[in-house]
Image (cartoon, rainbow, N blue to C red):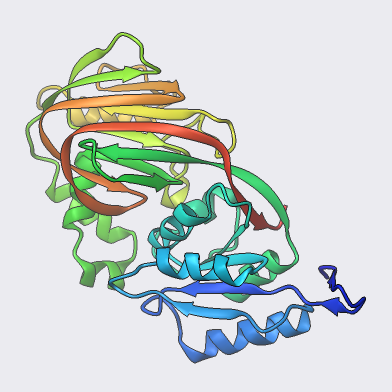
Length: 311
């Protein structure tokens, strides 16, 4: 059970959590009641309950939580909700907690957080310890800076996110992405110039460039085998299938025994990267399609986010 903080008058003062929840993903009043009761039984005061909206998917609620001086901000939703909340919490010292409610929940899966029982996940936050995670800052076409925690991509993977049918996602879960991926397989490569840590650029004809802070996808697939959330390093993956059988080379390069040892797949590591494309491509961060562009810069911010979880 967490210790209470001493108040100036010598009495104990309970800790308080803020819960920022995506109402579309939740079971409504039942989950809210369960989390309220959990806070009471664990010695925490009634939580600040804030729902996201289409217009504000988490950033404004996170700022309100910081203004209220809460001890932890719990993001209850999918990776998109987590990303929006983390973008505000990064660098503040106020920890983030995860209650997974979405389809992928990739950050939670990579951290070993319970994705099947939201109340159990909340219990782990309240009784957990803090650890530091890296965040990655991304700027598309030299405009607004975004933060992501899992992975971002230009090209094929982002086109999948942009074209996944919501109705299928609600009914089939992550299999909806497979359906979109098959539809998006045909397509033309684009010329790309990629520089890591300011080094000499490599030039490729690519279908996708992905940048990872985590390694594992749904189903235990490890697309970035060396990625860690706290190593201060970015992992880059270039997909460059060639010819009619090029995608078989991609499959071998990602899933085969000798990962990355095909001409269709290349891995790089560094603290920053710059990607310039000949033609505009779709762009996604943590599974959210956020537009299209030709120029992307990414930089890792080591240990910028505190997260509270069972360790």
